[in-house]
Image 1: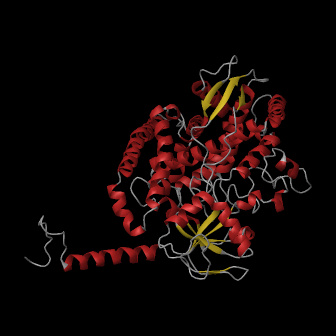
Image 2 (image 1 turned 60 degrees about the vertical axis):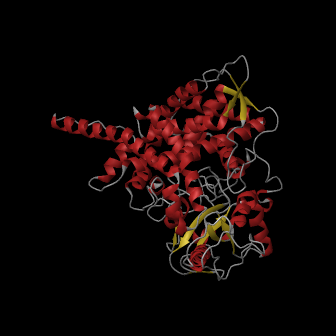
Image 3 (image 1 turned 30 degrees about the vertical axis):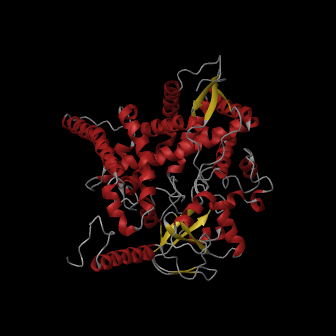
Amino acid sequence: MPAYTVLFDSAQPFQVGTPYLFGAAIVLATLLWHWAQDERPYPGFPLINKQKGEWLNTKSKERMTTHANEILKDGFTKYNGKPFQVFSDVGPMIVLSPEMAQEIRNDDRLSFMLAVERVFLPMFKGLEPFGAGISEHDVFVRSIRQNLTQSLGSITESLSEETSYILNLLLPDVTANEWRSVTWVPVAAKIAARLSAKVFLGEPLCRNEEWLTLSITYTADGFQAARTLRRWPPFLRRLVHAVSPEFGQLQRKIVDARRIIEPEVAQRKRARRDELRAGGKPHKPADAIEWMDEHAKDEPYDITLAQMALAFAAIHTTSGMITSLLWELTANPAFIDDLRKEIVDVIAEDGGWKKTSLYKMRLLDSCMKEAQRMHVIGAFSMTRRVTAPVTLSDGTHLAAGTHVAIPTWHMKDPDFYGPDAARFDGRRFLDRREQPGSEHRWQFVTTSPEHLGFGHGEQFSLSLSLSLSLSLSPSPRQHACPGRFFASNEIKIAMAHLLLKYDWKFEGEPPLKSLRDSEWMPDPEAKIWVRKREPEIEL
């Protein structure tokens, strides 16, 4: 019998010929070599979350999920604020001091777009929406930057009307006679999805139940699929992608999204042509479908992927903020009466929703910024890939190909925020705004090295749910998130309705703790108790 034949004689022990063993050894060695190449730490920076005797980086990454802030604080203490590195769930990451945020924010050699690709992997089928809008020349970016921000004043009243409709739809059984428990996180996601669709898709699609369900489920499933794929070394990801059913499901969701959106776009184009032929002026709805079409002209773009990108960014950011703020206010009810009074006074003074009404809600703005500080989206912000060698002012040399980030743990640092830094104080940023010269510095939409909720400087940072505080797109030099102005208005309108029309309470310990230390992830099963109240003013 040839030496390479596998023997199956039941009377003899199982044996494998030498060529098989040799081949298996080569395959194993090749896998280990690729794994080592993909997961090597960067030279010149101490690695702090890997212990002796650990061959692989799996446990290092798990520690960042469960103890990220503790690890990062220990690193800064141990190395006196000098850069070090960790293995995050996307691979090695050089951690810079928060003091470097101002220096790196505008450096064109530090690419946000490449950092996004490393996290969300939009080159894989099913994950393409995560790459929509990351080009600085993208139609998506220009339309949101220019049209969305300019339209904020004109859409306030319609968003308030839509919020009334949404809450009646989602909380139909809530009465003034008794308290009812609600599993809140899914409700918050539906509020965010519907409000965002009102502006991004317009009517009739903003109330299309299939689209609303699809946008919410794609957000959750897409994040999880990207997270799953990142667990594998890059050289195995094509194989994992090919055999994992979740990616096929995501691709089908994109097909379904096209089936919903593209007929509406085609119908609008036909209606516009017909109106022009008849000598009339075409009607242009004030929504992102029209904005993108206006900016595109003859430039190709994918309206479906762009709409999905808008949806998952808005759903996660807005629902997360509404949840964290509502929970903090319910756990700290002393602020609620003052907030209700502020909302009522502003609406009464303005005679309804005006362009400046939301700006006048300064206490609400402060509470939002404080909730964002207490529940910052991730352990890192301002994540970048170095595209050309960089030497920072402190002498730190960053080689091309390395990834860097600024941590966010200092947003609860007593040295800056005082001895009560770990406690929610809804007036914290209102008090700071009342100091001379600080009127605008501590608004919810203002970025700074001390508060990285939206990144800082010329970084587009409509944050998403992973272990990094990331965002959709930069343009043209990674300006701070234009979407944050829309998010701010959306959250204020939703909170005005939630506070004036309902009472809220927890039974037992408030569910304020995140399920992950590396990111703000509220418990999706947590319940809050609600009952109706008579609003002091008509919204």
